[in-house]
Length: 79
Image 1 (cartoon, rainbow, N blue to C red):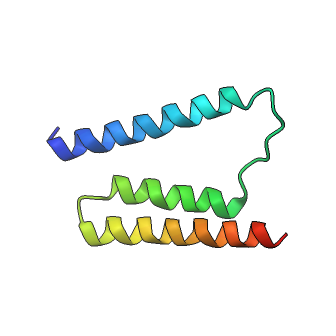
Image 2: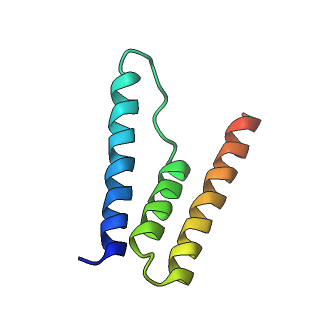
């Protein structure tokens, strides 16, 4: 494994740990599940990290994910 793959693996592990901690913390609260659009945005960001070897692909996927997340926030704010 080269250094880039190690950094990618660490980033994915950190995001998974944060997701587990948030899930455990919010177990007592009634939290809304992720909307389909925000799940898709999260998937694009993770795919951008995974396919980060080709910068234009990685940045494009991350940009799509961020754009979808912002659009989802805007839609949820209107409701």
